[in-house]
Length: 276
Image 1 (cartoon, one colour):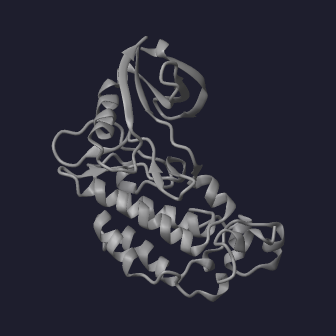
Image 2: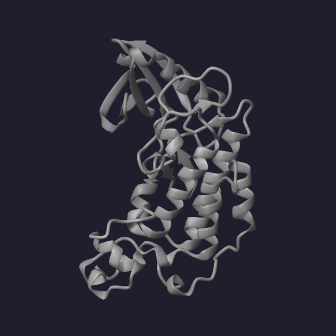
């Protein structure tokens, strides 16, 4: 089966997989080809089932699945666009943050509303792509699990985005995705996902209003976060919001562009960075 494809290069790598961009020689169709060792067959089978069931229209299409040379190959739609990681680096307006947040909430609502519910468990900028038209696409269902029943696999997620219970290997919950969303929201607004920072970090002085630190340069400015978003992050982490549906409702209830004078004329991540 692999001989039907021409591999053009590696474009990604995860904990137990590698991703290549390839082209079907007969159809001349570009594809993302995920290679997973057969020792992780159960993980690969579960991931393929998520794509095949189309549990969310944000997921890439699954073209083919086959075993060859001791590996499982998942052949998927190749998604064109910019990663959220790159967009955060470039700086995002408040209205753009809100639009991306709404699309993430819709995705989580689709997963959490599935029967049985599905927890994504690895929400981070690298896994989110914005197509040229602004549509959100979500990559990598390798850590996602059905909630309830027998569960297997690795639930560790990514350090910095996973709550303590997830890192400790507790039984998965959909609320873990809301914790990750809160971290991601902070990162979209400030360029940094950290809530607290070391005393010797130059960014620490930004929070304390130090002009010297601003001159040295920092990508962390917690004061730029609108109060409405601060409250939303607290609700996601405290359990007030419990799933994608409640997150979507909370976002829809917020004003389109919350008034927050300090960043009215700046892109969110640009406020501290324009002083580099």
